[in-house]
Image 1 (cartoon, rainbow, N blue to C red):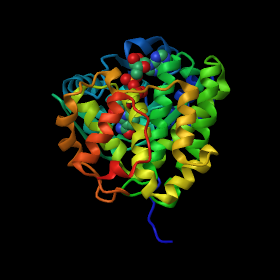
Image 2: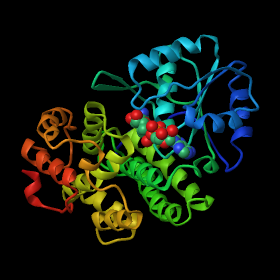
Image 3: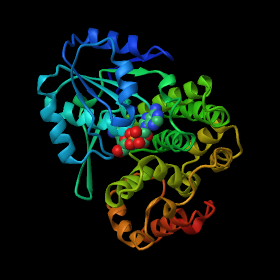
Length: 356
Ligand code: NAD
């Protein structure tokens, strides 16, 4: 066994119903006295409650999916009086705080309210026109994360399912990402177990905390594993679909995942065994599909804004980004078949044909 693993420095506080106290403690430890709170209008009330105990210098609520450069520019201007950023919201909100941190170096206290996991990665993303650019920079890694499952109780079931499957996609891609190592795989396996246990409970009892806590815990593990392993085939596909065609992030991940798993798993026996083991099923795909059925998961890209004609346009863009060491060679024809099946919502199958 020979590998190198970097653990990112971050304080993680996990306590349901205690976000306010934990945010105050996190800001105090960072020596913050002029906090910029970043939260979308929909999360404004939540953010007000969570930041009641800190000295707020500015509240900023212009948040947009995939962080358009103009939105980032205005947030950076608004940050000139702040010494700490507190973000309260989903991945779009965390992403905006990261864009501010990227150019200002301000520390972030992240309070996630979805299961996207951006708070546990040092990856930033910005969108200019139809092109999304991502990069890695330790300055954007939130210095503290406050996980309070009570804040996710208001997340509608359909969004909770899509977001939880986005987290599951982090786990699956972490099994074969370009820098995947045994620690990433161990974290990802436990992440899959927690998500598979928690998500059905969220669907059965959306107002209950135990399911939400499991999903939040799984989402954190998923993001840590993913940040270390790097983007695999799945994320490269979703990155193009989200950035170029404006598809919703979580739903796109939820739809595409079984097709990538069907494509890669037969060529990645270790990942196959670990994922199946985490689900407690004979095969990884059977586990994912069983979970997706219980959750009534998003099914087809055509339901989420992709036009059939976009597939041909997307193929070369994705192909150029496929990681060199993907377990299986990816060809234009194979990718087109994968996207076509995902567009229609066809049954994902382990099909040798999909490889050529
Ligand atoms: P989002 O942040 O856009 O939120 C989706 C919707 O849910 C919004 O309308 C929001 O107002 C609402 N919402 C959020 N929390 C809620 C709550 N508790 N109750 C009710 N409604 C709530 O979507 P997302 O899926 O969380 O994040 C997607 C973005 O995050 C994408 O831009 C993606 O690229 C980015 N992301 C980045 C990383 C990274 O490592 N950099 C990782 C994952 C996702």
